[in-house]
Length: 110
Image (cartoon, rainbow, N blue to C red; front, side, top):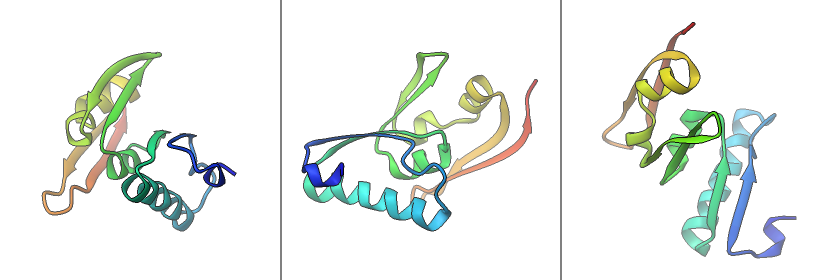
């Protein structure tokens, strides 16, 4: 229904929740195509940081309802963010060839 409205702005809240990996990728690829080819402004709420970092041009990370950080995925998705906001010790890196994020959780922090 949302796509049939031919809108200039698309707001999505967890559009890939409960989908298998194939369909998660298909949804995010359609959203990317709408943005790149039709100029649709897209705002997506995602808890999957790897997915957010892979598909977003710009991220806003929230902590307790306030803005923790914002900017390019490689600037926002850091080991500090994961520790401070999600209480997770993890290694974070970005592949220089394809800008793909790598998030490797080590352990939950107390």
